[in-house]
Figure 1 (cartoon, rainbow, N blue to C red):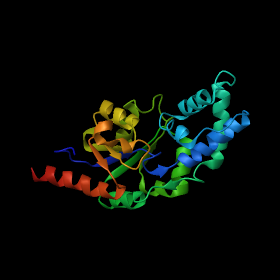
Figure 2: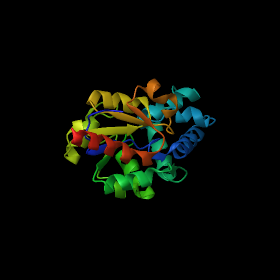
Figure 3: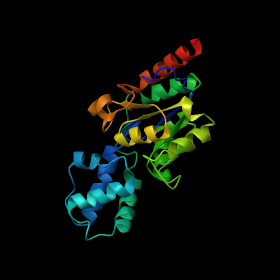
Length: 231
């Protein structure tokens, strides 16, 4: 845990942190590969490609399927995005405790932003479909800026939009990408244990804390706020 920090806002990753989007993404990748005349990849293999943006996901999928030399990445990405527009929010689910945790964060006066590498159109649609948009003040997507996580710029941009000093923010995510972005931005980072990479543990991911349920987050932040105020 991070001692001596007064948190006023939380930046939150989307895929693997708030929503289990893997079924939607894997289905879209499978349809893309079927369009290109090849066999879909194993579910866990595609899940391992999530988190570094759509282009990386498509590129690695083509490489793993052994067809990266046959199809242009731009073409493949367009095909994937067409399929993902159909599967987005259809097969996945909001992780247990996320809605309750976001609701309590808002009730306790914390501001919150979703900071994701997913493109704006897909992220906004997913947040609206799941109802999570009602609990978030800001969305910074993978195409909002010229750079995405692990660059610190999306995190700093979210802090500016929230009008909160980065020193009073924490990032919640599920992957090494989130840890790297937080470290570059100078923010504490909490990793959810149920996410796509959280099973590796806090030490393995070098995060500040591992949380098992999003519902625990408000109390953790409030405890640090109370400790700071008492000094």
